[in-house]
Length: 142
Image (cartoon, rainbow, N blue to C red; front, side):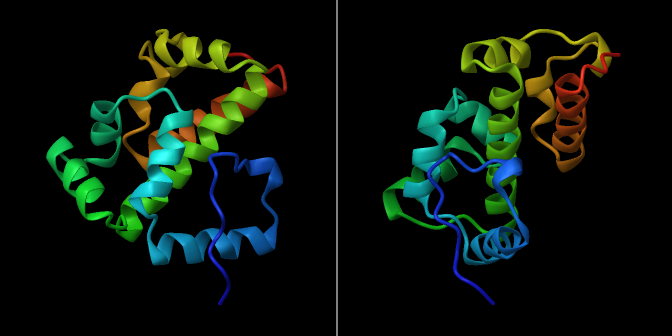
């Protein structure tokens, strides 16, 4: 089908074309290596505990993946990529990493009074954040 995407934490929706979508699919199917995940996690300010909640994996499982240098299964790999994409989109929309990080932590009226970060544990929540970021990008505030 295609080669896996080289992930360095810098992937972004605006940079993905049709060819890249197939590379994302291949990457998900092959699974993300723990070392690649670690590279992403070092650039995104979420703790191991938060990643554990987002991916529905125990911290002990993360430790085992690290020790054995395992790959994440396709479902977890896809979620890692989705979180990375929405995070990078947020930084792009807000212009500064610190501003987006603050937005993720603050309770948000447009999102029902919850912190945006709390939505990263489901695909539907990630989609909702992506939509909200698009509205902010275009100046359509709720």
